[in-house]
Each structure stands twice: as C-alpha cells, then as structure tokens.
Image 1 (tube, protein in one colour):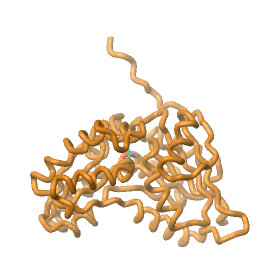
Image 2: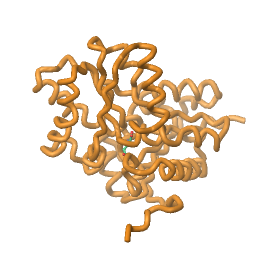
Image 3: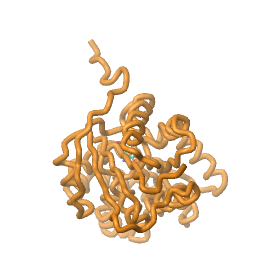
Image 4: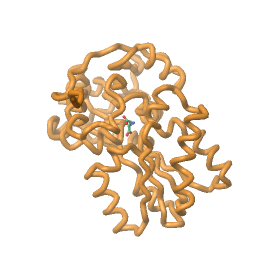
Length: 285
Ligand code: DGL
C-alpha cells in the first residue's frame, strides 16, 4: 500500500536541519513536510551515543504517529549515531541520513587535504571513521578533522554573524588552511547557515579558492529517489503542499528561525518527547 499524500518527517537537534529542508522544498515542492527541532535536547554533539540513539528512536516514533511516510535525519550527529537503529526499527520505510560529504570533497581537492568541520560526536562515531578510512583508501585524500565545539549552539541562538561566531570560525578554520586544506566539508547541518560568514573569512584570509561542501542538495535528491522507488511521490494537487513545525522547546523560537532563516511562517507546535533512560545523568557527588 502507498500513501503519497502522507508527509515526510524531517528532524534535527534544532534549526540546523532547515539547511536541508530548504533543498527538500526546492526539489520536492509538492510534498507535505513535518519538521521537528529537538531544541529542548540540543546539542546532540556532546551527548553519549546511546542517549542520542534513544532520543532519535523516540522522534522517529513521534513522526510516524503523525503519519510520516518517510524520514529524513537532517543531522550528521544523529545519522552517525542512530540511522542504523532507526532503519532496523522501521524496515521498508524510506529513511535518508546526512553524512559529511567526504566523497565529493575527495574529488574536489587539489592539495589532497580536506578539512572536516563537525561535532565531536560525529567525528568520533564508528560509522564516520569507517567512511573516512574507506574514502582515504580509495582516493588518497587526507582528512583533517576539526571538532567545532559550541558552533551549533551559536547558530541555535541566532548568532549567525556575531563577533563571537566569527572568532570561533576563525579559530576552527585557520589552522586547517595552514595545514594545506583547500576544501572544507560542512559536516553538521547547522554550518551551511553560517556559510556567508565562512566565505567572508576565506576571502579575508586571501583564500576565496577554498571549496565548501554541503550535502543538503544530495540528501534531497536521495529522498526523491527513494520516494519514487517506493511509489510514494506526491503529485501536484489543488491542495497545496504544507509544512508543519514541531519543537521540544519554545514555539516562538522555532517560528522566529523559520522566519529569519527561510522567510516562511508555518504553524509550529510544542511537543513533549520521552527522555532517554538515565538522562540527565545524576550530578557527581
Ligand atoms: N545539526 C547537527 C549535525 O548535523 C548537530 C548539532 C548538535 O550538536 O546537536 O550534526
């Protein structure tokens, strides 16, 4: 049985997934979409893997309960930690994850050195390290891993262009350029939201040639492929495509993010999701 009119459920630890949502809206304009920002539990990047897994499974259950026909894990950290478990829990369902674009970066680099900007959790995940090793073997490209502690938080706070965010970007990116990177992977879905600041930094550093790799477009294409393969693509209709936002924090904050980052005003609902067992950890005595 197929349900083309059912929505696609998209989620992230916060507003980062909006950098993926905009590609999905552009490529699949007829799909009904649900977007869940797990802002009340962000960031994922500094939490233990099993805690992220449990939370992701709870979000998947929530989105399925809203009728989702497919899921997009619009978060590198959640994909590395939990996409396998999510697929095991929902066999047969189209599920698309986001992985840092190491492969496209390996084919773009001329110096053979690629900087990877991502959360600590992504860069330590077994799935990511396997990908890195395999692409290094296949292409010879060297990957310089840079955990960007605190950057996703800055973006969550709407600090896209502040002095503190620019200083942070400089601290993370300049050493990669010094080591010879000519290509930077934006390995967290929050980071394309500060792409303009990164480009300005590269220009000021006299390195406007450095390529930036963001996989939002590829994720939307993969979603389109999976929906078509499962006969789940929604056709154009007199009923326009809708978008509904959900957040585990304040509706006002997500409404403002939709407006400021995408210039749209969808309805937003606050949701309570179950906390993973053992979270938050008891304070050390
Ligand atoms: N947007 C998320 C990602 O792509 C991570 C942010 C976080 O640490 O929660 O990795």
